[in-house]
Length: 143
Image (cartoon, rainbow, N blue to C red; front, side, top):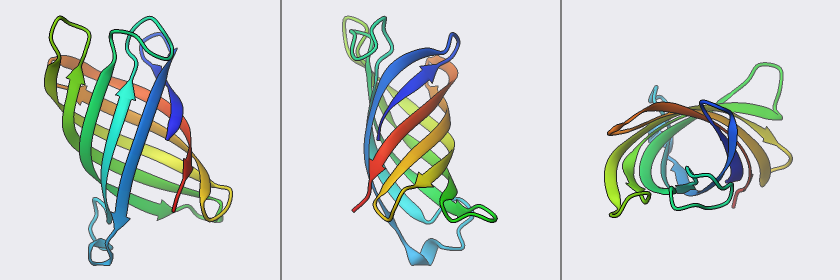
């Protein structure tokens, strides 16, 4: 997903790059947390620049996603996504690795079978960093 985050406080636009892969498993259809196992890599700029700064972070995470339909529409669907992984903070003298926990709620606007726009609100927790939220908007291509 290519998109932008609006980090709070301040609603400052920041670059956010995410690439992920997931697979839906039929035996998990009745699981309340999700039926799609995911792995993703995210780069998020946390410094003064939009695209990149010395305050960036890299996160590798695994997760479980649950897609669900919304009433009276087939163009828009919703999803929840729970992730756990490692974040590498690059703003200090040494790279600091910390546990990452992310919980997201989002909507997908489907243009066709392969192209869509994702709108996502995430609640993120990195050990040693207070909870923070990000709002992301990005384009995806599915294969």
